[in-house]
Image (cartoon, rainbow, N blue to C red; front, side, top):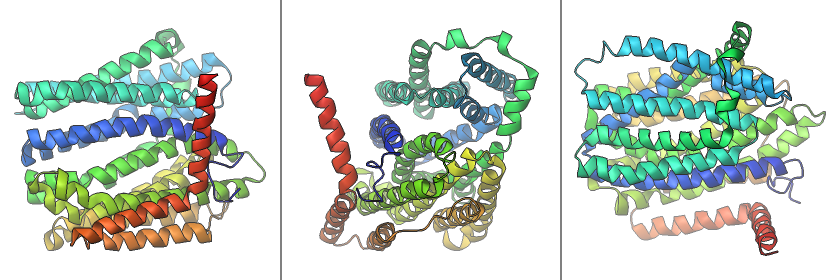
Length: 478
């Protein structure tokens, strides 16, 4: 067995299985969402798509403010809890927090909606409510080790949204509001599936709510709110600043530049979700240094070889798929993919900090990176335009990575092996080559080279997954 192989390690089998489940659901979900993005970019003008992306960024901003990140506390307090009643109490108390905050939000926002059309506001509230509910379901199902249920709900949500979007956006001409309603209705159907299959109606009760448990949950999660807000600043404040300086059209271009990196980030998040669960268990072992290092090496090889393919394939989107008005985004996508790589490594280290119950350290690193992102973007926006957004994101993720690496040094010392260092070096080459996309023959040659490199570096893992699929097929036939 190759030491860096993640899928073949004995202790990593649970991590590999959970990652496989999350990857399946996330890949199907994001695949359909990406197709829907292509349709929306044609149905909406560049300005309208920029406005829709801006509203979605506000939804992501409001989630940690409304929930106080208690969905993460539900996971952490329940993942090792053997008493079902205590798990139900955690869930009931967390929902009580968001119910109170939700009512306060409605009282504040309804009188202050200004000239926003009523149907846009209703679509926004529908989409927001479903995203909040889904966040709690994700925390609970992760703790119960029922990731497959959550993955199917993602697939259902996106499928319903994709089915409704053609009716609501081009057919009925609802524009931005139609896109919000499509995604919101899709989320409602997906969440209904979760309610039916998880037995929530039997688990949640006002009688289980206690102030003591709410204090415990919020006492843990409150340190994660700055962390979540800081992630939002790094991921979405760029849209606000771009919109402020350059308008909706430029924001639409930058939003499209973010799409391939965003797909990469969400797929990588499938590993992060599984890793958080595995890290809690690994950190209890005496030989945790060796065990975590082995996972880290396999993760780095997979991460940077996979993103080498992504950064090499980006030109296809802008030459053959997206409308011509978005072509300038080709300059920013490679930088944002590099930023996604650094963010993924930071999330790996953050999983260790969460496993050690150190959310304060986790949040401090993210907050420092967010401040760097804001200051850099604001100071460079006038001088280098949209490049200020992508470069500040890259710099911020690098700072966060270095801070987290330093903070966990007392417990773990993680270093690159020769294979993982080769993966990082190859990514640097493909990153540079992404800016040499003419003639197209060279770009296609680099794409084929990156695919070959990915297959070579991850051959043990691919063989392991192929063997697992053959075993399942054989059992199915038997």
